[in-house]
Length: 163
Ligand code: ZN
Image 1 (spheres, rainbow, N blue to C red):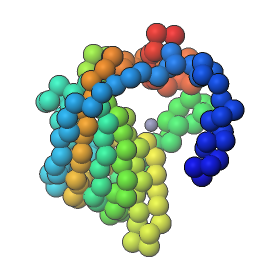
Image 2 (cartoon, protein in one colour):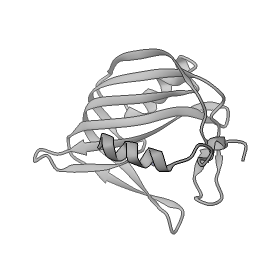
Image 3 (cartoon, rainbow, N blue to C red):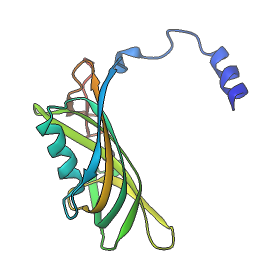
């Protein structure tokens, strides 16, 4: 893998990537803790960000949920399709970021959940996912504003990078 990566890197010249879409950010600090039993997973993480004035950051979490509501974005229709998983599930991975939408912190997270047989479900984390137990780490970042606005090409509220 390392060799392939090196070989690939040698064929890439500096200046070929659109760095207008990439920003440098710096790690400031981390919060780590657990969420209360029975809270809404997405809402609770968002509340921590609002409470602590976190406008830029990254999130990771693991644990278990009582039930889940996830989204899948239909790229043709430009609409989210939401579905419910009415069963207890493990959070095998949650990864997300914090940025700004309409002047407030917004959490964008994707989650992978597994059932009693180890089968996995995944998608865009939506309100309606209820915590059984959850350990969360939030890394606070310092950098330019990452502000979301409607992207015409995808129909999604993507980061506006002064395009
Ligand atoms: Zn998403």
